[in-house]
Length: 128
Image (cartoon, rainbow, N blue to C red):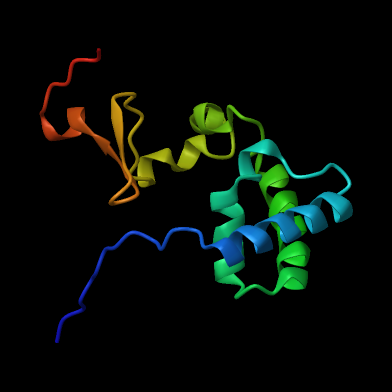
């Protein structure tokens, strides 16, 4: 018996979801003392929350505040946190156990929603 894995892109954001995104964004801005950080205040991210919580905006607002507090506590804040991630003192000891790439030659695939690093696969890519 095997596990079937299927990859497919997410459905585009619907008109109803766009309206819900605007509503949850307004609720979050009203209830969060410092507002919504720019790096998580995107339609895509808020739609992910709406889909994950099946449109339950009260639960989203409650859990979003906890999510932001957790990010703050872990040091995952600021527009450059991804670049600083590997330098965080609490992260460095565990890097040997984390499979991740620090290569800067990446391509974005909307179809697969993942980063692809051509250097890891032995391909050369010239930037234009």
